[in-house]
Image: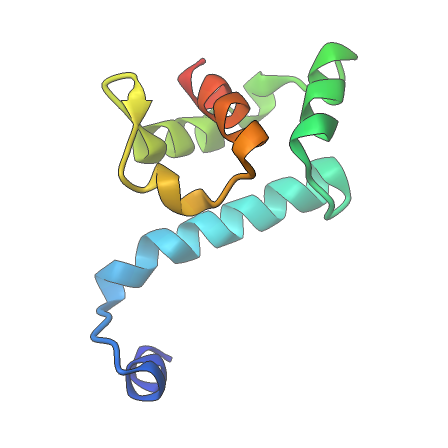
Length: 99
């Protein structure tokens, strides 16, 4: 797959470049599917938290992974900008990851 991508798009990706992307994609798809019926939005997350329907301890390991990748010393890491949140959702995303 990497060879095809590199040839098709003129990139020079290595397996270690793609591993975090694969991890994120898999974890996110599982999370979105199991908790939000494949239709996650920040507002749905806020509603679930407010209603007590979201127990973070069930996702502690996944949250830890995201926190380590996207928050460094209490601030968004270089990877965070590439998540492409809508402007209004970016602050909420940072808030959740810092918890």
